[in-house]
Image 1 (cartoon, one colour):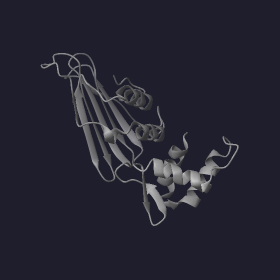
Image 2 (cartoon, rainbow, N blue to C red):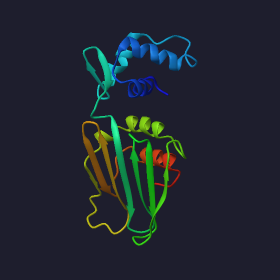
Image 3 (cartoon, one colour):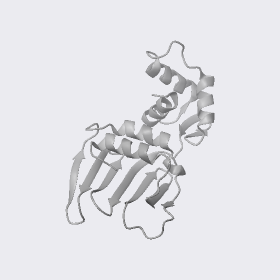
Amino acid sequence: MKVYETILSILEKKGPLPITMICNEVNQVLSTNRKKPILPSHIKSIVTRKKDLFHVNDGNISINPDKYPFSLRATLEGFEGSSYQVRVNFVKNRFTALVWRNKDNCQPFSDFSAGFPGDIEEFKRELYTMNIWTWEPTYRDEAGIILEGKYWSVKLQTKGKIYKSEGTKSYPENWDKFCRAVEKLTGTPFH
């Protein structure tokens, strides 16, 4: 786990904290993997570099509300073959995955509790690295009429904002990484 991911996990569990307390917590979590302790200046540097993820108020660091995920819905519909939908509720630590082969046969893949088959916290960390909030609202292939391929949509709701993105035969640069993260979480294909 990267140091900034550790900071995000700590802030999620404990709420806003000053840099010195974050530093102590990070050193406790990462003590077995590091020879030297992390210094407050290192934490400050990370918070400054990742300023889109962190919010600073009166010396306390918190997760930027516009980046703190509450829920995610991702849909991938094929003009032929299978279609998929996953809904993740980060607050309740649950997700549901649906797979259907055609428009008449929609069945839940399953409704899992946290940690089975994937880990929602790990999925959330991967979302932070993918920067979904920077995706364009619409991705389109300029070919004109589309008779094959996939339509996809992603809706990410955070504490402070809703991000929506969709496309047909055109995807954000890290789309494959996103699909692998969904597959890892749900244990079902998403492609």
